Image: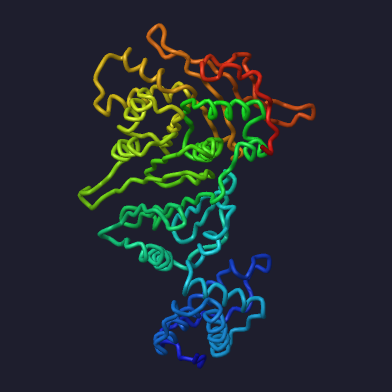
Length: 448
């Protein structure tokens, strides 16, 4: 490996003589001085790699790190930039991520505690952790830097991001999802949203320990799954619907065959017999597209014991209800809705949009016959996600679908005046024949 010094281009920036940030309280990696040095050092590295005809991506990571460290040291010496050993290592590590990683996003993409990464232009990077959004000090040098990192992420996946293709929404190899939109559609600069999903899903016991539900609710949910009840998980965006659906499927007996249907692959199921199906968007004109309705019709020929739909948002809603009414019990799905009652209205609207004909009373009866329980989740003001209610659909009467709420979430003050969570059982036993004798089920500990 040739580690000799290569000259910088004549136009290389010379405003890189800062030794420490102007604000001594500001970490070096978040200072303007660091950004200036990083830009100039990266240009030097790229020129050296080009001059030496190096295929840097073919090297092992430790070889890249040694090469970058040597070249960085020579660059700093040539430009008389005084950095201490810790600052030199920070700079070298960042340059490695620029060359073979994803720059300022690299560490975030490998952090299992981060749910979402949100980039609003080159100077604003935010993350969502545990339901709370936090703004970071990390940033891109400029818009070109951000676009270069974005295109590096997209290139191996066969996608473009330019003026002719200013929007992209793709599934990442690790199971996450990336959405990006750039000028001229994004007025204030490129906007990126990266959704990350847990490799090891929460169990109901995990959610109990985290304070998302209590033991009585956990016991009822486990009984509902064991009894092959049809469950609809509802809530708004980011409320935790997918996490709860994952946990519910984890209660399915291991001998049963589960088939999942998703538009955006988000489910990560802890079950030994899962068949995962995903839609295909097709070409620019929609040619060869495959949607949830087509997947659902196919999956019913695969002898599933359980059908799980990641999210109902179109014609597949009615198709799933029809399949359940023909005997596909134990099915589960999520639906975006602000309340259980709103979920029922949404199902009716989706049925109409799907071209369903017949009287409103007939539609209500088919909905009530198909869905046994609606489990509603919410995200509180402090970012925590909790199970807000468990509602049973009991039938149809007086021109409406009849329901009863079995559990409801309440916030109350404890003896010290602090707000705490609580759930109220409304002294109503499930009416479903599938849950006869549920009262005799023991309340599980949260580690189950």
